[in-house]
Amino acid sequence: MAKTVDIEALLLTERLVLEPVRERHARELFASLQDARIFTYMPEDPPGTPEALAVRYQLWERRVSPDGNERWLNWVVRLAATGEPIGLLQATVPAQAPAIVAYLFFPTHWGRGYAREGLTRVLSLLFEEYGVACAAALVDTRNARSIALLRGLGFRVTKTIRQADFYKGRVRDEHRLQLERASWLRR
Image (cartoon, rainbow, N blue to C red):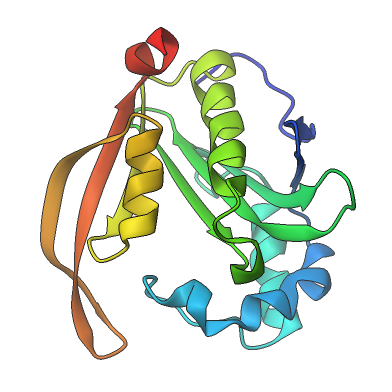
């Protein structure tokens, strides 16, 4: 596993503060997570209750999987100027495989570059502080905006998984995109 990193530290960018997710965030984020547009390309639905969301966040607050083989890094993304929560960023860092990144932003903040800015900070953490060799993301092949975001950061499609999932009445294909540490550091 990586060198010692303060997993409770805030991550800062020019416009954002990434705050480690805690159980108490469930009530604050619940209403924003009810927008079904967020889940168009995800095999889940909006959380059913603030209490159910709190249970998920309580698990995430451990920052490590039950078997100890993965670091679970999850952040609430806030606007630095106002403190308003605008989304979530995630990184799962296994002991022996590529780190998996994921992100979810509230629709009122789409198209402003926040996902790129926040994900850039997370990738810097993974490659420069955790020393991961590779980061990957799994994206529904129909999610053009997300694919463009990842490609803009240097990710490339390494595999397309046909019929990866069935949800919301449709079969879903999925791209696996990857970014190597060496490519990131050459940027």
